[in-house]
View 1 (cartoon, rainbow, N blue to C red):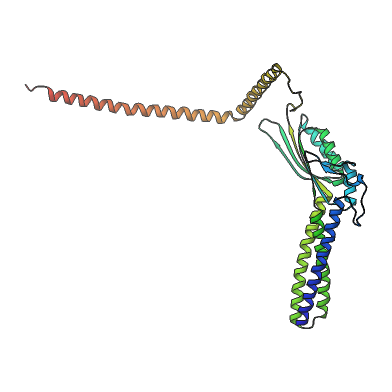
View 2: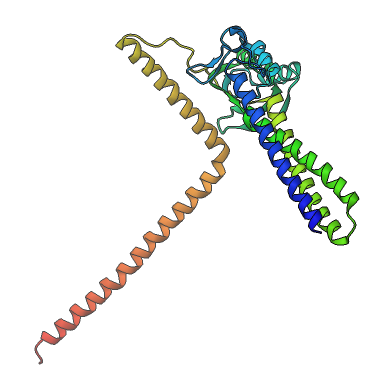
Length: 324
């Protein structure tokens, strides 16, 4: 038993040193890649690593742009996660929905989530979560912007190289540990040693399963970018007019917008009234009946008071009348 425990202790120490070494190499390699050096320490050409983020957070490829820069980063082992959120308006909702579906299919992506709804005004709304291959992320965002009127967009790029390679090294270490434990299990003689080693094997297998799931999650994030799309049907596209320069133009635009807003409000009220006329009629009847009942109760309370006052006055007159 002592011999088995000693072997397990040595095995754990050796694997810990291996994991630390692998993590250091993986982190250093990723760091060198980001700073413009390859894994061997040689400087890369400027065109391959001259990249930065723009002021609005969107990825800027520097010397290379679009999918070319993304492909160059992937070839050097840099693990990037891309995502975007885009809000759009359209006058032709059905056509926009069909064009978006066709574009997603053409780039090899898929819909992770879809949601359609109707507003009370009758205008429709669609919400999507789209997954597209990372190498087509930039092109997809540019093309989807030509299908509808974009009102808001944000792009993000996150470097997960450190987490990725750290998890990968831990997984490799756990796999080596499992192999050595299995070898020890074959050499174990006593039942106590077998139980101890099998327990260690079970824990290691659980760790491998967890790390493998994390790696699959990272691979999915790196391979497919996530794009959230919001498509709203409107009667007029916002932000399509030039900004007014003079006071007269501002006043005229405000007057026109006010009339349009009033007309829209009246239209919405008419639609609501046509939909809820029965509820309004019932509510009006209840209010009318309540007013009538309250008025009748008030009149009923006043009459007894007048009668009592009259009787009191007559009694007082009788008391003051002299006896004959």
